[in-house]
Amino acid sequence: MKFEMPQYHHPDFDQDFLKEAPNVKLEEVKEDGLSPRHYHALSVYPEYFKVNDKWVLATESRMDTVCVVDDTPGKESVDIVEFRNLKKGDKVAIGRTEDASEGIYVWTQGFLEAGDHKDTFAFRAGRSRETAFSMDYDNLYEVLKYEKEHNGYVTIVVGSAIALDRDARAALQRLVENGYINAIFCGTETAAFDLERGLYGTSWGQEHFEKEQNTTRNLFETINLARKYGSTKALVESGQVKDGFIKACIDNDVDFVISGTIRDRLGLPETINNVYDAQNAMRVHSRKTSTMIMLSAILFTIATGNMTPSYNEFDGEVRPVYMYTVDIQEFAVNKLSDRGTVTAVSMVTNTQDFIRNVDRALNN
Image 1 (cartoon, helix red, strand yellow):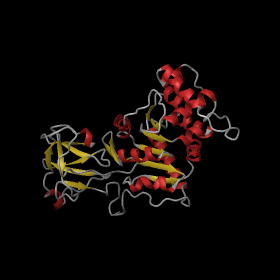
Image 2 (spheres, rainbow, N blue to C red):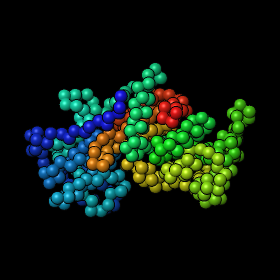
Image 3 (cartoon, rainbow, N blue to C red):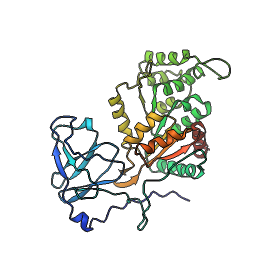
Image 4 (cartoon, helix red, strand yellow):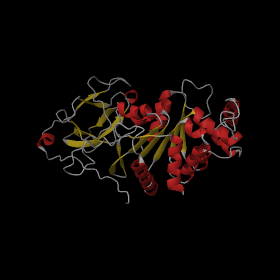
């Protein structure tokens, strides 16, 4: 059956409680990065703000952000920003209720048909190893085909498990080369493992894991070589990296964001070590992402899930942002829902098998 994007329905603004609701209260920021008291913190759900008697939808709504309002007559709009990005003079929406009584209305029924009252965003709950994921795979294949056909934006968060497995690494490479991936988030070692395999044919210094003990010799040779060339791009363009998903990104102009961690001993030239700079770089992509896939990288997954809207507006159309979190640990996939990102479809499975399944379905 051909995939169809769910249609979004705005609330009926002719209802008395919405017509009679007051305009949202606004208070100016007095100092950069310092929010007024009683600010309204947003969630992942669609939220409307009444400005000059007009209900304005906040697109890109995401966890733990505030709403900055432009109440210029005829130009009413809202912008969703992080607390640290507030600027002096910004007008912040004030109010802690979500029932329109303070000019703020949270709408959870936007993607439901009339008369359907189930929780719009509770796509899945309580996933475990015993859950059947066949339908999830089938739906994901159709989503990714749709995204490619309609110029969607697919971002994938990759843990080191993908880079350490020969077939999984090749599968991700093909997905990038065939236009199914638009951006990759990962840590230094994930990218370096992939480059090490492309340079030396080893992972952690080993051609085959059963032959010898782990060694980081080739890993740091890889990082040093990239630093010698000044960038990973220059290293790849030197012709020494034979394959891999990082090479595929560079060859196909697909962006990747490498975020540093406190455990890094040495970073690639592109590694972003300042956490706020890394967040900003990731948000450039998460704010325009239409499908997010997160694989075996629990901290990056939680961070990415919380900064990614559950819905967004693309070419004037409000649509859901599809989100998948995949890990062999039930704790890892369910943690994201615990943190409030309830739109994520969780799949408890080996991520190496997962990415190979996706590759076989889309590229064969």
